Length: 286
Image (cartoon, rainbow, N blue to C red; front, side, top):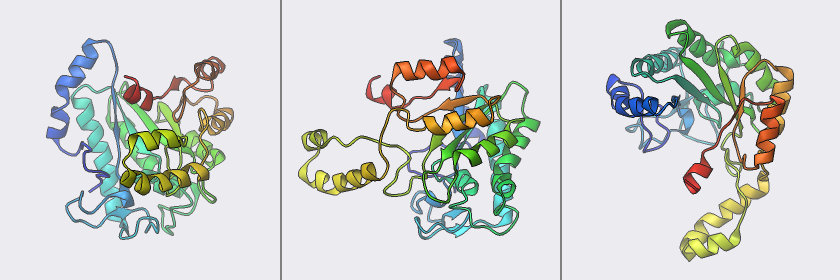
């Protein structure tokens, strides 16, 4: 029910964890660590991906029509599902779990004042918006081994008026600190035309690599997105620095367009972050 896109794997059954066991063993034999990122897509789920079920989310999301607000029972079940996922991961020797609470997916939508319009104990005040995430990490910490790592990927800023700001994010970090080992700071709600991932507009590349039909379909959207939210190196850095200044004891990672080696070294030397997160460079230049 929480599957956001067609090719995503799951961690909702014992079989889902067992299939990863050989990979985890090889990674550990090579001396590396591995954490699994676990996500619920919320109102972003597509009906055809979740067997025709109606997508459920924090509040009805006008950006993704067709979803409905979760009941209290569904929220409690979802908390339990995240905790059960951590047990399955621990059972095959995975080093930790990362909760995806960024980019407008389910947990992110609860944290965001822009998306969370609830009037019950899951919305309104900062503590209420945080409640679902707080209950998940508290339970995981209580029921897993002390060396099982808990990380959370969260927005340092929603980059929309009325959304999460770095100051709000810092308050979340403070309250989660007793349970969470690492906070990976990202940003954006994935709302068109302002996406979670930013890019530069290179018209020559699009002309070279796309057919005319593809160009006509795709390029207007890219133009709109790149005008709305500008790309720059390490575009979440300002939010990370504000959070670090407010909660210096929190261990932070930065993700998003981090490409400049000098800038990376500077953040690490200052202690602003403990880790640099990257994905696209390893896909584009393996």
